[in-house]
Length: 422
Image (cartoon, rainbow, N blue to C red; front, side):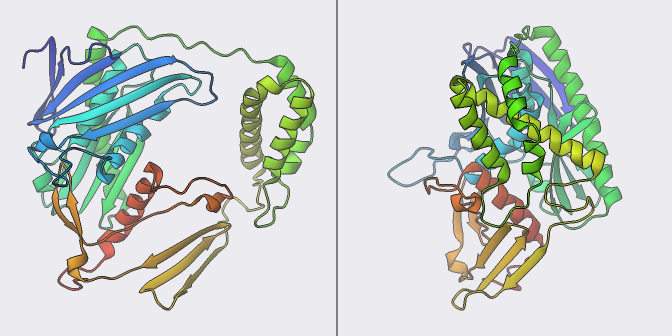
């Protein structure tokens, strides 16, 4: 493959190659990362500034069946549809690592797309996707406090292994994905059997050492071919609006934060915010309500931290070493195979279990694997959980992510297929 620039380094005893080609010249940053025969393309694109009150970042991870030489799907639709749960989890993994490294005052749309172009069924694309996304941002003119990198650590009879091949992870005692910046870890995923704390720390230290090597490698590339970063225009604070808010909230904010709240009632803070907006409308600040909400939320955040750290005072009256009241019930319904209700304060989780014959296993067809799945864990977060009204659609990325988190915790405790085939 003819390339404009190629850079190589060592990762886990194998060569990792970064390739710059004219694959996406209109993107702010684009490149290929190759490890074994697995290849990832990453692009970073920044749009125009928007008049919004949040940082608009989207991260996508695309699995292409051709990457693994597969043609799957129904007989009538032979193309990729919605992303698989695995692809959504990979996208969330990248998002969690890179999002905190942006200036949250940025109001320009940014989209990161990582695409698996080739998959050798041995080298996990997730690690490459993070490096590729980091470099796409690093060489671009998009302001970002990277680079970042991530590695997978497993353990076998020979000890801890960095980025072991997929075929070598089946007998691993645990598997952890660790990511971050130089000398800092900002994301950990962990699953497997119990291990002691010192062993986990050894895994994290090994990961950090490898992450630092990857960041040094990226910095070399960015220094050679990176573009100059744009400057973020800081929004000038509206002093008149701020003074009006200060005047209205005087003595009211602390009172609302620590007011007793009955179950099912609207939060006193939300009521105060509604009343503040109403007051600002009447005072001629109707066009500044979005900015006013940001100021209000910052005040809440500052007061919350100040009271907890300086006075050990929490809004719900708990001490710093006190957890919310815990309650649980089981066997709520006669017709289900299992049911339980768990409560922590006002947060309630209802779980219902179904057993079925082996023939009911879910068929799985993804870029990485084809087979069946015998344990399913579905997590749902309906709008009434937080007293809101929203359309009832399929599970979102957050629900898929939280379900995978719970599955990781429970799966190692389940009996084997031989012991319990259902």
